[in-house]
Image (cartoon, rainbow, N blue to C red; front, side, top):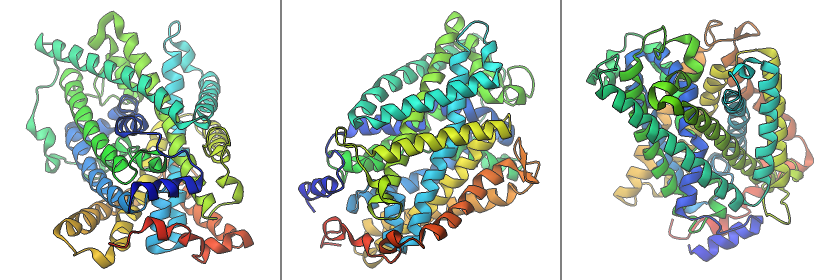
Length: 499
């Protein structure tokens, strides 16, 4: 299968082909995960759940993510498609499984917009005056809605505009991360540490709370999520068979190094106590970096606050990009109404899908804020549940799609069977265990409909997808997809004869 054939396929959908290389793809992948925002929003909750085993929880969460990345890479090599999980699952298991995987991608994107917008808005307001503006839920929510609107507009424009924006935002993030780590390292050298380093932090069996450790792993899965944006932009990437998969793998490894380094330094300096600056203090769980800004950067602590805002802003945009392209691909294959397949003539971007994503995200964010004043932790875990679901489906889809040729070579057996199988099973265990745990009304920080708000948002939103699919499948315009006819739209070009 030649690069020309792939480009012609991308052009067949109308997306702007060949616009992104390896570096911008990797930057967009990192921007989607937004390392500084992700740790700021989750590190406190991870420590509360796992205690001193927080570092190994990050490593455990990385394993299925890395294995899933291999599955994504293999599938993308043969079927580079903006729909990613949706398209691959539909071709491997059939239309309904594919539709449900696509719904999972959409749900994860919408839910996570609430938490990342909340962080972006609050950290921006902390830069003004004494920071009291960040205590006003009305101001925070209003600014958050405006941020989603602006990022939707940026994503509506050419994909190169989004990549250029990510260059600047990612540079600011990593400069702040380096400064933060250097500042804490110097403080430790001068004897200002709280907790001496221990290799027990990397022993998962040292945890005396298995349920809490699993909760920490679920939270940690969230902070790696986002690298698959590289694959969603495959049809707009140079060398779409190889570049997106390599960018995804490089992104995950970079994230692991970043997260472990920052977590260990923060634990050594602040400790894991439940009072003061301790990372286990529930009062500061939503913004551990804000409490440490002065210790790490002195009078320039505002730089870290600004960088967290930038990081959250970055991931707002890069959440819209893949989610909109996912629904766009579903529209092309007639899995969603025709308007979702519409492209902007000027920018060759999925205009309707992008605007739809922005509008739904604003509605969900404002609605959940009205229902519950404290949604950050619950939205993060709900997102992780949806992510674990569609990552598991994609891992198994890799095995099913290549089932006739799994043993053609040792390489195929490893990368198309063994690694995806382990990754899919791990994701499935995390999903099932977490969903059952979330039935407890005391799980998380909010209670809705007699159970935890995390369960309602996570499992409830996925079950809603089954209802929406059942309704849409009855429409005449959906029959081609659910009968499997529209899935053959690009098969002749995308699947080479050598398979």
